[in-house]
Amino acid sequence: MSTTIEGKAILVTGANRGIGQALVTEALHRGARRVYAGTRQPYAHPDPSVSRLALDITDEAQVRAAAEQVESLDILVNNAGVFMFDDLSDRAALELQLSVNLFGTYGVIQAFLPALLDSGGAIVNNVSIASLAPLPGSPAYSLSKAAAFSMTQSLRMQLAGQGVRVHAALTGPTDTDMTREFDIPKASPLSVAQGIFDAVEAGEEDIFPDLLSAGLAEGWRAGPAKVLERQNTALLMAQPVAP
Image 1 (spheres, rainbow, N blue to C red):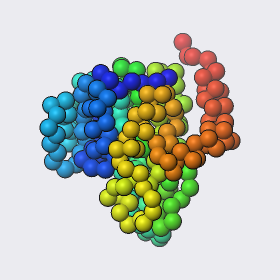
Image 2: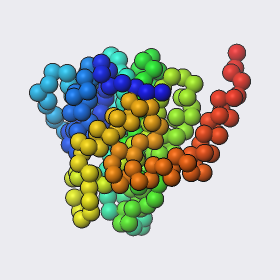
Image 3: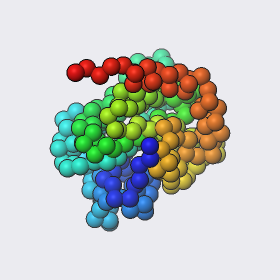
Image 4: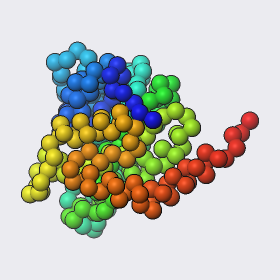
């Protein structure tokens, strides 16, 4: 099932830089009716269609307040995240990345899910290709993204019969502040944003929006993990509905 961007109300978390900023730009380019830019820092945009939401996704009260400010929502893009170098010896580093990349994303989804159920909308979680295999030098980040991907798949299964589509964006290295330390080929944020929205509009569940990640797409979609996910979803959908 596809979701057009034109005429829709869209919320992007982590919208003040990198991929988030590019997603705001691309949503406007595709004719979004309203774009909510969720940021922790002060943020201004020249387009009156963009509304800033004060949104630290780890602050439950702020997340609830943000949800109360949004009258209707069609697409939620969970882009906000944190990256740290570690070797899994520092529990605090692991807990911090889980608090943002997993539990922060979870909290935002729960807060905005009623609006998405009303609109028959879509959720897009930026989970990174690090969710498929650990990155060297940052296993805690990879662990948190793998958990976020599993959550995404679980939500996709749970919401399959309720009209809300759930997408995972498995982005490769992108030229942002987060990857400044890596001397590797990187996609531009705008090309990644375009790839994400192209795939959402095409109805792709798992999105591989750049050249590096796109090389994994065919193998993933035909692989045993995806086959098992489809089988489990079919089992859930076959369960009788309670009266």
